[in-house]
Amino acid sequence: MRLLALAAAALLAQAPAPEVCAALNVTVSPGPVVDYLEGENATLLCHVSQKRRKDSLLAVRWFFARSSNSQEVLMVKMTKLRVVQYYGNFSRSANRQRLRLLEEQRGVLYRLSVLTLQPSDQGNYVCKVQEISKHRNKWTAWSNGSSATEMRGVSSHPAERGTFLGISLLIPPHSFPFTTDMVSFLQSS
Image (cartoon, rainbow, N blue to C red):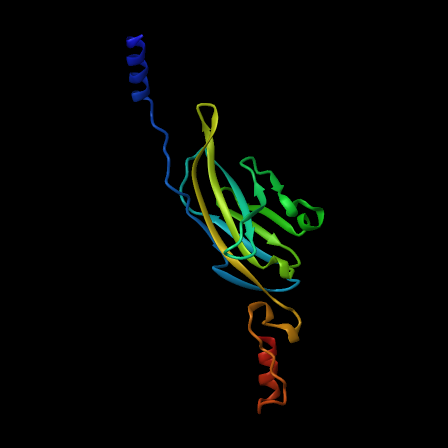
């Protein structure tokens, strides 16, 4: 029995150790804060730039939180086999039609599109990536990485611009000695 244990220990010592990296380098752009007009389509890119194992696959998940203090909720995921899955309220037909997750460049760049932005889309978007591969006939997670951006909405109505950001840009045209061009510029900013 003791001889068997020694032989097993010797075999394990000779087996190559799996290469584990500490973390994936993940970047979300644009960011860290991006402003969009209500009704526009928003595109967020999740870029994975760290070298990984040759045989690994990536699982990409996008999370959403209304504020930095609120709990993150899983929105959409691209599995290691590149199947897109929707979660929670985002799995409902109306919400699912407004989200698109595409792999732009295999294992490197993933695009999340949020179509026809609404005020409820304002918040923090977090891309979490997990590197997975088979090791001894089991799927094993080797490393993780994440990055986030804050999406803020600005009303598309000139009278309401800035209100989502807590700033009022309303200046009555005849209250100050501004020219018409200056008022137009302020209302379009």
